[in-house]
Structure formats: structure tokens, C-alpha cells
Image 1: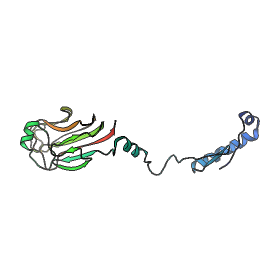
Image 2 (image 1 turned 135 degrees about the vertical axis):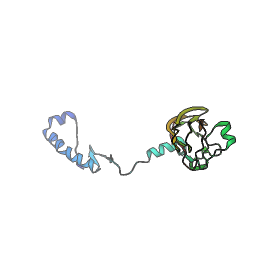
Image 3 (image 1 turned 90 degrees about the vertical axis):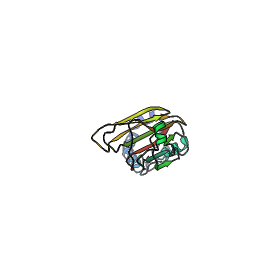
Image 4 (image 1 turned 30 degrees about the horizontal axis):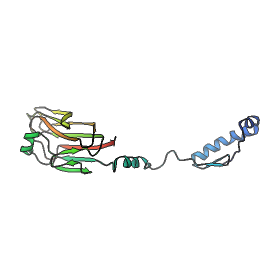
Length: 204
């Protein structure tokens, strides 16, 4: 790239030749930046980085890895069978999801259908619970440590396969538990219509 020696501001102001050279140098400097060529100024080489790299830098992924171990926590499960285990459903009204689609990190317990947070962070949850008979009214809640935080309702008496569905973000501490609870009604839906999913958005 072009080189230009600048001695002092007062000398620059007194020298029309230097001002002219600086004016001529500016577009060349811009050309050099666009083509990521080094620019030499006062004997020092300035490396210009491309502001629009072709691939995404790995800094974000590395930052996530440093802060949260692997940073990969995700699960998704579906109800493959129609009827709930009567013993468990009568006692806690927990909605069971017996077929695991994704369980990265292994933090969703399929036996209890409970997700246990491995670390403090913001988590995203979504659920889609389908009733399979009309004349039913169901209410489903996402329960966090025993308290409902998100609820959904399905109560159309003329619709057979109606869904109670919702989604949201919650903050969880390490060891916090989240599951779906049937607050109202008699859930009979299965056959892979109903799903429960969640993942770690970012740690805190």
C-alpha cells in the first residue's frame, strides 16, 4: 500500500504538498481496506481485517463451551402409548412421555418424565398435549419445582383431537425440576401426537 511519513501537525498544516498527497492517498487507502491489503503509515504496517467473513467465527461457540462445559442441553419426547400408567397418573397427575427423540446431556428422566436442570440458566420449554376424545376438557401446566408457570387449555366439546399447547422461557437453578402436569380432565391422548421439549438457551 502507499506510504506517507507525517512529522507533526504544524508541518502538515504548512505544507500544501502534504495535504494534496493526503487527499490523493485517502481513496487508495479505502481501496486497500476493501481488499484487505496492509496499509503502511509512519513505517508501521496496519493489518485490516475483513468485516464480513465468509464463515461465522468460533468465538461464540467457544465462549459457550468455556462457560457451561459443553453447553449442549436439549430433550424432546413423545407419548407413544395411549393410556397413562394409572398408579402414577392418579397420584401426581404427571404426564408421561415414553419415547425419547432427543436427550442431549441425559437430563430428561424418561422413567419420571422430569427434566432436571444441570446448571443455572435460561431454558426454553414447549409442549403440545392432544386429547383424543370429544366431550373432554383438559388443562396442562408446565410445573417448575411444584409450581405451575405456564398453562394451556383444550375444551372444545365437539373436537376430538384438540391440543393444549404453549411455550416459554424460564430461569432455572441447578437441580431444579420441570415436568408437565394434568391440572384438569382425563388425558387419553397418545400415538405420538403429544410432545414435550426443552433446551438450555444460555447459562447464567
